[in-house]
Length: 486
Image 1 (cartoon, one colour):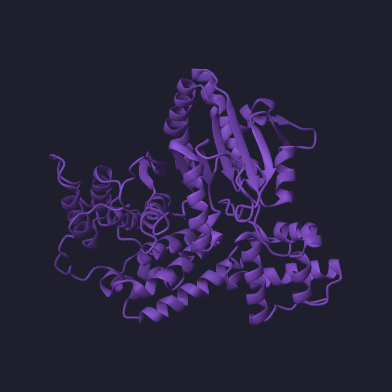
Image 2: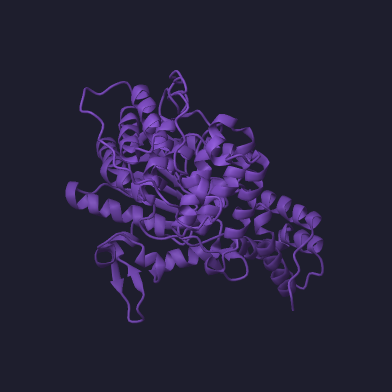
């Protein structure tokens, strides 16, 4: 029997119910998947209409079915050692500092993996700590992973994994942290497993499993992207209350506290950004620096990467390959001087020089958003897509309103074969483009109207979100960057 997509009115009712039950916010791109899930659950429960089904799941007697629905609509695929820049920040700076603090205070090191999915994230944290303890000695540790999905937590407690989540772990991790099983799967080693506890928890409706000031580190990655602003603000307020002074909060690369909370300091740690609870948080995320005057209009140059990629998003465009001289060796100038020179070099097609200057500007001032955008564009034009993605993700993290950065990131992710990451970035571009300045968008528009580019982004967001190779079951989309709800 064919499943029919529910009407706009019914989808609005379902969306409101999901917000009430778990704070989940899904856009129209998920309507087909949600429709399939609802029809399957209605058939199994004998409910004849969406209204009667929702009334059942929100009643006192419908708690079991409510859990079934939440399990079905939440996305529960991730992998070990995900987001390597954050892993390195944890390994080299954050966790050693927290271990030293726990050792001097005599209190347990307490970590909350909020939205832990099937357990890869808290187990990875435990692996990092076991490795650290081998070098500096152990301290008492409490790692608690919570999730809204009972099915995901069953997998986490079993601690048995196979497939992509294992293959994507960092080199050597499987041999060191897992035991082989006769069926070809792998079981998390006991020293790691013993550090982690899992609990069923709804981040929106349930009380946190900690006392005020008890937590040293909250890791909540790729969770708030499915929450509305009010829900996210309330959740972050709880995180701040629960964290000890000097405690850390880690979010996903697509998430930020921009216009959500100013209670945290934003700190660059290696190639990652982390939030810290300080007595007096830093004010804002970008430096208060004068905007440099726009350089003279450059002479016409060969068509560049983002103008070509509009035609065929998955096709690598031609790149400018004219050799360029390295920047002169001299004393480090002010970041804004390097930024101006980087912009000039980019406009002249000297991409290696532009990338080098932009990198130097951001090294001197790590919150310089435009520096990351210039570096990302320059690296993309040289064919370094991985480097471009890293730079552009920093830009949109620091300034979620940077429409052109969202668009550049989307096209690069599409080119390297990450359709769901590209879909999210195209959706973000469509949302932020109307408010962007014409000067900023001039190269992207290439004579088009902003509305045309917005329509294109919306179309690409939906198209890539429907990529059949990354669809699991009736509606749970598999994302190898670990995006999930709670």
